Length: 327
Image (cartoon, rainbow, N blue to C red; front, side, top):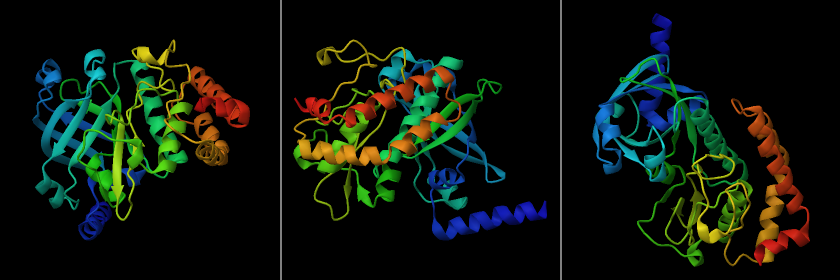
């Protein structure tokens, strides 16, 4: 007991010096984190479209201890509010308890809970988390995620699969930049290699649910000293890789389903596309093995996603077919 207490005190003394955030510390563990959310769930679900904050206590079972942080919670998202039993959540923890526990003031958390109970909703959650992690293989600009097991005061026996997505304030601190306050964007002000990388990644994962102009599922980072913005995609539940039954493509895209690949890059030159493809080809073995061994992925979807990877890399190896994307 004395040894355990010493380890906990040592852990917190390190954080008092380094002032890592709660998110950083949980991510550094590299394991699934158990979390209990205590709030008025009936009110939250009944008024989820209003996206109004209400009181919350979040208990984290980690670091060899049980830590409880008070704060607020509200629903977030758009389509998931309409089609999912469990909405995605935005959590704001109180800063003083975080500081008292040795963490920094970064107190915002984005939580994605499995859309519905049962294996179908759990499968969506596994595959979307996997896409976030796959993105980190292809790009140096990405959101980190933390896998969670969530219980609630409403039903303590029901364990829900979930994950935390790196919030804007956390992201901007890690990249030593800022999140610009804007509602519209143009490809003229974007770092070209990062933009083409994003376009190619979204094409790989069969994601058409994004748009630069209105910042739809694209976040921008203004890195210190950089003249161009860095685009970072997020919210992949409408991608063919996730394969959610509620995901449908926009009518103007003229494709039958989200399982059909569609290139959405704008004004990409052959030279830019070739450079991006070279980078993606250099990551082929790592990315393919990542999917082949990803924990929790069922055999049917693993086979489907590996087939998509094969098709994607066959295209990259065929210059004539590849350049047709730019027409």
